Image 1 (cartoon, rainbow, N blue to C red):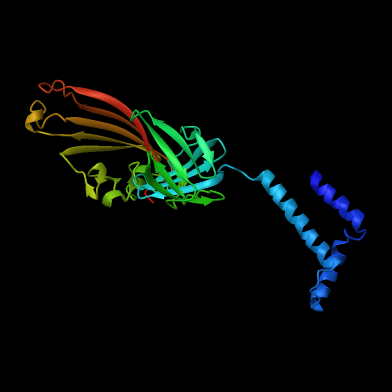
Image 2 (cartoon, rainbow, N blue to C red; image 1 turned 90 degrees about the vertical axis):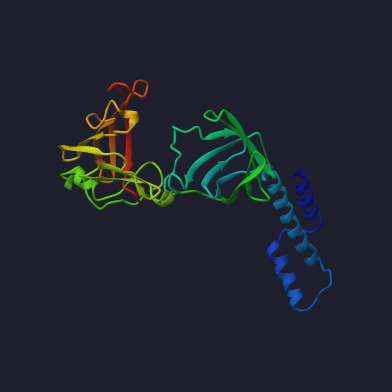
Length: 313
């Protein structure tokens, strides 16, 4: 900036009217209109004005220019789904993760519950790198983003094609039913009207969902085929307007379960379903299964589980 001041002081000294920018520019325009292309004082100082402006812009731009990548919403996709990253100078955060297996309308990232931020190892104009350890695989994966190619690489192999976007906003979730909770007087009857997810995309491999009926209680469909399986006996109990219970006994008279025969079920499930919203059911299940450690007599091992299911999109 000192150099700029020196130039301005020099111009003040050599031409008292030099800082009359508008006047000099207008005079230069008039000279061109009159086809006067000689290098007059007006043209000279007009050229100096533009030079000063250019110098200032370059100086300021150089001061603020970044030698690292910063993206608000780096959106990367492949055949399995889509990931949205927020990239700062030293950190990368997974903002959203969508997979075809779980459903492209379901963000698998839950704030506060996921380990979704990672320190960058390098970050410059050519790209950035970071690593991530997966405890269930007991492996560390290396990731590199190539700015020029606009691609993400995993362990040296191209994994995703990316787009650099200025913002990310989730699509508002649409109501999956028009029913109101206050109008529902029989949760089981309400449940029989819809297909409910299994935690995976409902259209995965031809269909993956659960349905309710008086005949089967809760019936699972996978790969587009109903999983009826062995003989079952079903008991359905209404607990309240928004809660019901299904007890299912599964029988299997194969040689393996000779001790059980047709008299004793090999699996017993007692599941309580609570309709918390018109499109969401929370479940509590007691699951009893034949003790495989001792199939010579009738005995069971038990476990409890909780889950949630929603109406399929």
